[in-house]
Image 1 (tube, rainbow, N blue to C red):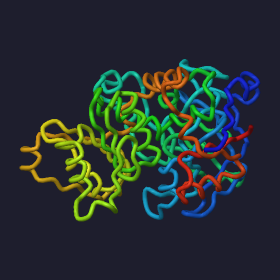
Image 2 (cartoon, one colour; image 1 turned 180 degrees about the horizontal axis):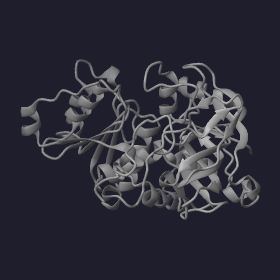
Image 3 (cartoon, helix red, strand yellow; image 1 turned 135 degrees about the horizontal axis):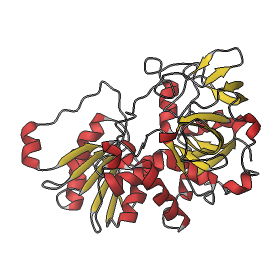
Image 4 (cartoon, rainbow, N blue to C red; image 1 turned 120 degrees about the horizontal axis):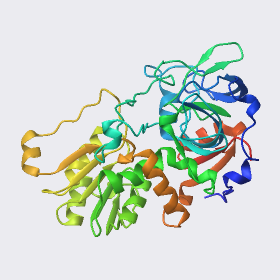
Length: 388
């Protein structure tokens, strides 16, 4: 891991944003994906003023997630270009639209892909984190009016990504997707909480509710899988088994002969893991994880994103007889506005180990290097600084 610069928000910002830009378009730089699988191009863009219940944010730093890579590679719908990718970030409120009272100019905020309106039945319930007022879908727009807040200098529309679009110096996000955070947290750690790390930690903490002394098996140990391991550790799991490399136990698929990974895990655990997590996005691994879970009470949580047409095939009798459960979990079951502050506090209290996830840091002009590092398997999370 590189010796990362740890800078707090007050060290970066000189105070509140200048009021002379409020209500007006802003001209700034953004990294645009103009064609699939081609390097991003840094250009000047125009960012419109926020509409009612929207916030314009000055991005301080952002990090690269596999979801950005996946959509950058896509050549068919839901792919759309030109687009401003990025969805893991932290920034400062530059201006607010009409009706916004949750934040003010100068507040430190984390933009989120998952909404939390705090008003609908789902957001008010402890059982769900899937807002019904702003249903999650991969739209290229911002807001329910389905329009963009980005244009290039020639007036061409630039599309949004996952309601955030953080590969730009300024972006516009709905207030339901904005979390006010303690400015004392280092910016290059806070940005990780927008997606991957929170998803993994939350999956162990909220979606699975891992109990003390239990056994956890993780299929796929990229950033999300390692975050599951961290969440399981915080929950007090006794054994954490990895498919690629171990946390407390180790399974190398190349050294198990004719046995499947699930068979090996069942043998290791005398009946199967209490909790299994699929963190890659492959139906074959979902089946393997489900098979590796313990009969009677085993729980399998699917976190990886597969192709939309991919299907799971389970035996109805096996499902009945096995007494185990299989569930999907978006954002690890976390409620952004109430649970992210908890994770921030646990990091500040030196309980949650965020530092280990940051393996590289680059400046905005070198954003394509972040793509190369992740594609080559050399990076867990690369933080991209707008300005240091």
